[in-house]
Image (cartoon, rainbow, N blue to C red; front, side, top):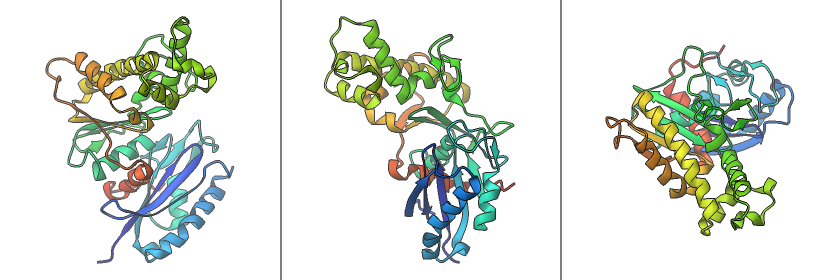
Length: 325
């Protein structure tokens, strides 16, 4: 029986990364193209095909490719479409899975990027063997994938799991992308951390801080982290505040689906205990006793460089009937 491989594609607002992955999660090939170069989706798919064709030939040709898994913003697993993704240049509803299948000649499965990360974690990472867990991606935004009884929760329309857009502080901070107030993403994302730092500096004009060495509009989560590691009190308080809000939100999520673990992934996890300790403390503090000290709060085990590719490729092995229409 011939070895089969999966192609994993992760479409971001700026770049698309892709690779060929075997059953064990080894990435045999990886590459990238721009997500913003082509206004027509067909031209983008043509470039993607040209970029992957040499690697497909290296593994023996398209007959050795079992399928293609794709993670994308607003990706709908049921329909195989990208629906009104605000940070992609292609507008409206894009029938991506069917277009990819037509071009490559193999089945394609599509889901949103956070769901793809959850599938990858279940297949290759910290959630291996788990049937109930929640994946939280902490980057520029806050994404999530919810797995219950061994299955991703998609909801009736394919869009379940937008935990980052749940309201955690009524009438709180404005989220400019959605015009909603007080969402988790507006506080617990890298963007939210930078906003909190600026607010703390404005609200405490007489307190010294290393953060004041930077123009306000240049402060980002990396700068906040570096200042916190140098002992800056305001920067450390930013992480305490962020962890308190994230922990409260996670407590709500735990009481919803009673997961075995919550797995944190993304650039924000580089802050380590600065974010993990206050998050864990406030999660436990806001849980009913029947849920306390039962849920593991851990970081992803996927290598960051390959995580997007692995998560998307895992769809090929996990999903029995990928959408192709």
